[in-house]
Length: 221
Image (cartoon, rainbow, N blue to C red; front, side):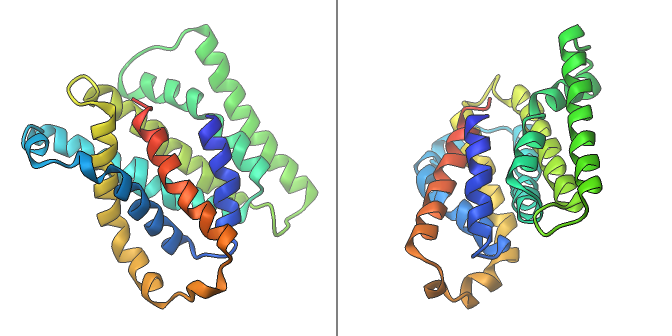
């Protein structure tokens, strides 16, 4: 959660200067530069067909959709609001475990779910009372909440795969699929963007963001 929280601030700083589609694509390119050695043919051949289906679902929801929703969300809302909403991930995981895995939550988990829902409601009500502003947005909050749901579903799927595949391999495969999914969206910006318009400090944040996201994924199983 510390990594997720720090990435919110970094992501918001970067999307102020770089288009979301380009930043998202670069995030996958950088991550795959780190993870590429794990895509060895001998290991890939050992992955079963059913596992590939699961991996693609994880890639679509947990890397592709999560990245787009989170970056577009933090662009439209405050870092504080995004941070509070993102911290509801454990509660949403408990809720999804109840729904998808039929694991009934205990009393503490139920309380965390209720508090998480209440926290999201309070943030949006408070922003509504304060009035719409450039830094706060209901749409942005909903996008971040969507990213939280995608991340939670990724974690639920990971519980199945980590029984047969190492978490670091899952991370590599899902990021590879994520790169393929993101390429059509970010290619136009990749070839037309004026890279000289962005300062070195912002590029350093881009380089920091990709590997940190990948390291978080490799430990989430």
